[in-house]
Length: 145
Image (cartoon, rainbow, N blue to C red; front, top):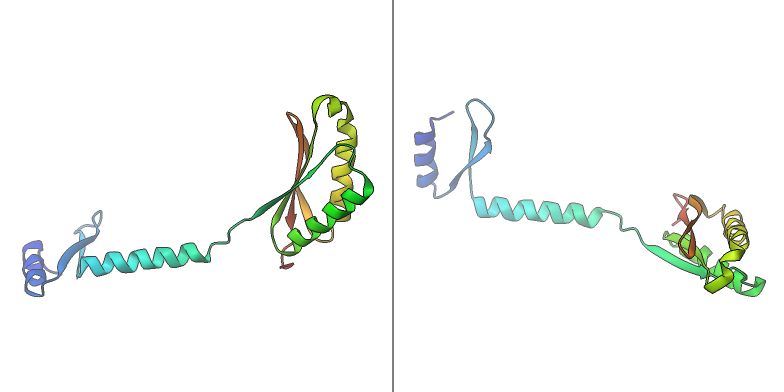
C-alpha cells in the first residue's frame, strides 16, 4: 500500500499506467498495469463469452386454414427436421380475406401439429390469433440436437 503520489512515481518509472480498480473502497484500490493491454484482454474475454452464447434460430412454417393432408405431411416433415436441428418452430395459419371464418379449423390444424411433434418438441405458446394470423411456437426438447 502506497500513497497515491508514490504509486504514480512507481508507475512512471516502470512506464506503466496507474489504474483505479475499486474507487468506492477506502482507501481506493489501484493497480499498476499496461492499460492498453488490459483493455485488449478485457475485449478478448467479452468476445469469448459472446461466442459461447447459444444463438436461437426460429424457423417458420405457414399453413392455410384448409391445408390438405399431403401439404400438411410435407410441412410436418420440415418441422421435424427443424426441431431435430435444434431450431425453434413458429407455425402459423394465415387467413386471407373471408377465410377468417375458419379460425377453428386453423386452431385444429396447429393443435394436430403440436400433438404429432410432441416427442420432438414442447409447445411454448398455444395457438393464438393475432390479426389475420394464428401463431404457435414449439421449442425443441433439450438434448435432441
